[in-house]
Structures are given as C-alpha cells and as structure tokens.
Length: 87
Image (cartoon, rainbow, N blue to C red; front, side, top):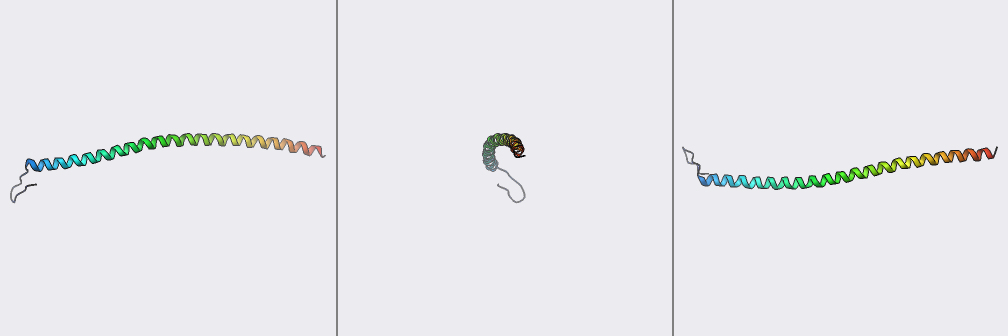
C-alpha cells in the first residue's frame, strides 16, 4: 500500500491487490470445502455400509444363539434318553 508520512493514501491499485488476495484466499477456502464435502459423502456411504455389516453380524449372532439353544436342548434330551436306557 502507498502510505506516506503524515497522510494515508490508498490507491485503486492497493484496493485491487487486496481484493485479488481476498479472491485467492476465498478460492482456496472454497476448494477445501469442496474436498471436505466429497469426503463427507464418502464417509456417509461408508457409514451406511458399516451399518449394514453390523446388522448382518447381529442377525448371524442371533441365529447362532438359536442354533446353540437347539443343539443344547437336543443334547439334553438325548443324554436323558441314553441315561434312562442304562438304568
């Protein structure tokens, strides 16, 4: 900027330089925001994928618990049956 001793002068060229700097900084900030937005979209998709995986794992866990209970019941019945054969 052109500032002289005793009085301050701002020229059109000074304003143009400042405005150019502001525009450049704004362009950088907007580019960074676009990158962040793109990352957020990917993160949302990944999050949905993880949610689906968690639901599948929980479903499999419930099925395995059912299988374990059924096998335990059958084993109890069979052991009772075989125990009664030997007495």
